[in-house]
Image 1 (cartoon, one colour):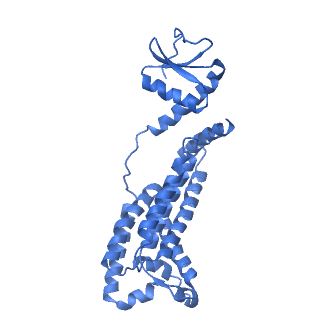
Image 2 (cartoon, rainbow, N blue to C red):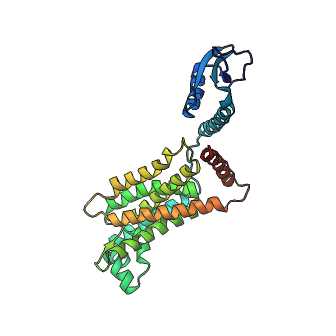
Image 3 (tube, rainbow, N blue to C red):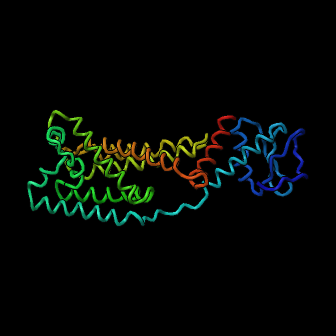
Length: 299
């Protein structure tokens, strides 16, 4: 907004000057903010640019809303750095090496898959509790391995970029393991056995959905409600397109992995936000967004 021009005279009497902008587009933009408040305003050409006018009794509320709008626009226009993953690359490469090593061992020892697959009978009846975890490193064939390595590697890198290497991978493997446990429990007492890293891959997807949803919720305002649905919709779309097709696809495992990822991811980001010190950037950002939301709710 340009400086107020005391010399600007509105064509209509008893009108207050909201502000003067250098170009008509900026004046229209700020007039739309006034119209969104269900208030009447108009634009007139004045010395130094284009002025927006409104009833004098509404000027204070309009200026407050314009200040709020300017703060939101400043946040949106901040340059976004492309993600540069550093801390989690080594752990991700270690995970990929473990997948390849386990696959080679499966080929050399046919009994290896049977002993370490996610068998619900062996888990619940024989107490072989390691199976939900070890099954994450086994694959049926090279195509199965390649698909999980590519898609899973990408999603896992995004998780560790957001949460850090150790925390991110702990959540990914925990989501995959818990997803396998729930899948086996769902089918029991019918025998069920599964292998593959896709449960952990969908766990990573769920974690990303949780992170996106949490940050969308933090930035909520009457202009920011729609982005809250975006991460959830994208996550459900990928789950539907990639996680439910194929005769041998473990749909329940994919769903439970995704669900555990969402729950663990939400717990992690909420705890991370709540655990920061009073002067931490996370708490400061949360407080600023909270004040903005409070103002909107009172309006």
